[in-house]
Length: 286
Image (cartoon, rainbow, N blue to C red; front, top):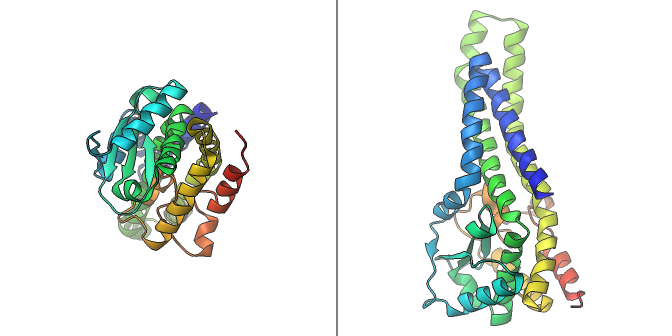
């Protein structure tokens, strides 16, 4: 299923960029956009994990600084038959975590300093098991490419806005035909709807994979109640102290939504409700 999701996302990115290129530059623009899309698709596959780590200025985590993390990761990786992932940390008091990488052999798990301060050993193990579940289920490739796709769609919207500002007026002065008017309408629609499309992509791939990672993580850690307790603490902390400088295109990577909004915004959250996740975990019998 993840292979089909990835193929769909890459195809959507390519079609969208080529379509915008055609609107803005005809066949030559479409060809240029296709080349850009090809480069971005390859870059998303090979380098998206490095880009996300750099975006949040994640630093390598040493065993001397966090022996409890290494102990838990070794136990979980051994139980699941996975290689040890690279471990990083972000220096922020807001507790959260995410995993990235195209495969178990190229995976990285990132925790915040706030997570290490807040969690008990069983809760921390539950969080790490959840993230390693994304690696085991190969969700990390889909998540990383989704971040690249969402960012590219936002860039497309930016292109469309510039096209409206600098391309529309002069063309209307030179030729007032229906083709020019249709082109302007198309650019306007894309400028408005492209960010919404990026959000819908994240919604489509995020909610079900979180439930799956919760279930797999509970089995890997051997204690669904530890993960349930961790999720409640993380959700409360995210409400009180949201993670600073979060790129919305990467919000779906985190174990709990780092962005907070009103009730309407929650309808479009990249994560399922914490209450439902906790209920499912507490009802599990291993």
